[in-house]
Image 1 (spheres, one colour):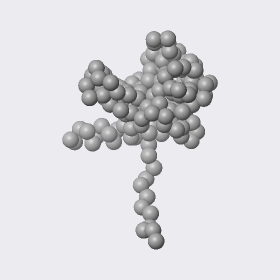
Image 2 (tube, one colour; image 1 turned 90 degrees about the horizontal axis):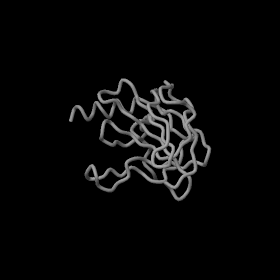
Image 3 (cartoon, helix red, strand yellow; image 1 turned 180 degrees about the horizontal axis):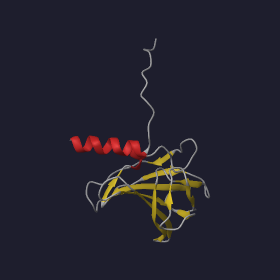
Length: 153
């Protein structure tokens, strides 16, 4: 349990940028982890984004892949200092603005949303993995402090 708490705190401290926006895009489809490695599920989050919208790095990292996969443009950003194996965040369908091997700071434009068939409307699929394990990419976002509201009438 202690490792899980540390891991979540690390993820929350990593980045503060939505990959598309501003300020934050609508979530077209949320993360639905599959019950097993080969079962159905949604291994990422679909964010509302028009074609050609800029995609920025949600955290500092190195572009480790930029190219087509199954007919769609994909970009993978590997995040250093996140343990072994390091966290990798992926974006599709995109047109890459930077080649593999490029190191980028958080907030750097790395791609543009490409038209695709992943969503009924154009969207950006955002994924997160550690090795073969899929994680919720929303954990990369910093959230503001919680605020209590006074009791209502």
